[in-house]
Image (tube, rainbow, N blue to C red; front, side, top):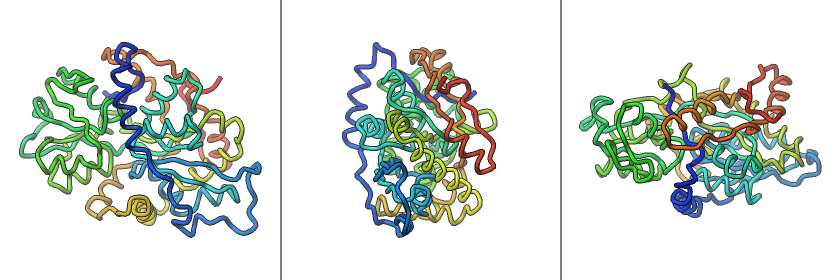
Length: 371
């Protein structure tokens, strides 16, 4: 059964959740990246601005599940499509901070996980964003200390990290726990399993120190744990039909989409062409993603982390929209969340236009598109 990934918190606990989310947003907002980090980002001579717009502000996370953004930027593929409309980038560590940036106008378009997309949409009553495309699937694993945990049943009673309260992996793990028949208080993380909310950046150190026994985390954190002696006990993709679940979407401010559809189309053109380039040139794409990670964070991933992490991520233009209905059903079934109204969260019109022009098949919004 697919693992559920979070959406809308019950009204009764919304206030309790708000404080940690706000704290995360305050501490994890990424700084603007330098405009000249790659010569391939330079505007071509004679290029023209799209609709006269000077810049488009793009956000993404500095991890491999945002490979499209990393590679597209490093190879200048977005800038090529944007002409003289300059792409300005910001990096983020957490979904709430990127949604905050989208709401404030600090970014116009972003690569982001499904849970913050849904939370941002529902909390604004469907007025702040649209999901306009997919980017990546998979890349999430349960990695454990093999000396302490030898089978799935051994997870009971252990301390397992997730990135943060209510994020995509956190709720996926909570749902998996419920599927085992175990009980955990979602807010405190206490119960038959101790769910320890830990920033991905410090999870490997927490593992090495023995303060956690494992983690349900995205790449490359999962592969970093394996490099420290951890063992992959479960790949989340094994829980999903066709072994596919969306890990990264492309979102846009509704205001920006309405005012600058040609710019949005250009970014989607860049995204689809980037995905095609990644598929055709996996080794070069892996190197490009790592180069951009180094440019953003000052540190590249070592081969023993990069190689297995890269293999576990599936690049896709399809947002795999049908998974959102499944996730919502799991939330209601578990009694964790109120049923969200996701109607209108997708607008795949421009993506399907781009896909058709590039000879690719159209993708479906599972009935959750703009009417």
